[in-house]
Length: 419
Image (cartoon, rainbow, N blue to C red):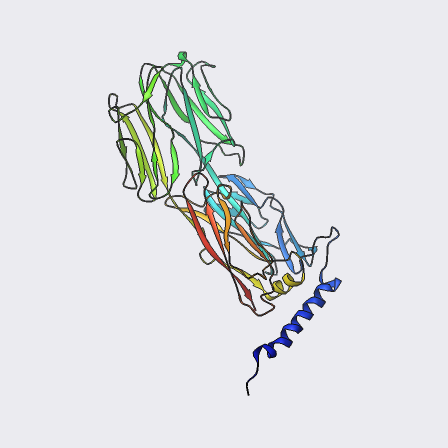
């Protein structure tokens, strides 16, 4: 005897619908805090702001504060445990004190005593490297200094403080812009030198002294319009070289200078066109044909951007799925995505990465999908999928890119419901 499947399933569908309506209408099933915000049921472990830090090597951070709640009520969090993902970058002791060890990135995972909840704190240990198109400056001229974070080679702009710490010339014959890094020397400074340093306005990171020689304005000097750049494979860039003879300058041509690459990862033409072949670091040198001591350098940081972790997925428990259907704004699951530069550097500082969702193929029953622009935390709210027996809710396609470069990568993150 044949049965009509629609007739057979109809009572079940009606029953589930009625139960959902009754639950959602019952005041006790939609608890609110005093400020009318929803109560997050179950155990939740959160970090008080900030949720990440940039620090220098040997810096100590002892202001990590966590809060543990259960069904909306704060409970004892003194027995949480701390674990670092990379002891060679940052360590953490039993009370949550973090110490920077070496430039790089580490994730501090905090887990409750019960093991039911955990959260992460991102640590970015950084050093600063000074770059310049030349280590020489002609008396009466300016030289633009540049600083980058290590690792990541992120150019620092407004977050720097430049100063001269040592000089072999009378005070007042050389100065540097506190925020701009523009070094200026007078005509009277011929034959001297200065040591320049830069510090960051975050993390108290200070560079080692960078020496700059002051030459006579009659000497020949070559400068470039930029000193370094993060580039993608197959990307091209045209460098502009300028030749200085005293106070006079002119654009260099192939008749005036020679170009050279120190490796096979990037090439340079006679016209200063740089092309990236492989990931890695390459130094491009331009040299005057009439004075072999007049040189300038450009550093190519060829990288590939990869979004991780490799097995990234968001799991919604049955309870999260149920509550997501009955209550407002219940977060069902989240994951912290990472953007890593391969080819010679560690993870990118999150603030340098632009995160965005470019496609959302989750079921329409899913309440909301969002990604934090700064931290790369991808979150979803609870779904009715788990309650209705749907184990695969779909996937979200996320893209990470580095502003000012052609580097980007995408990743499909599955969203599943655990029955």
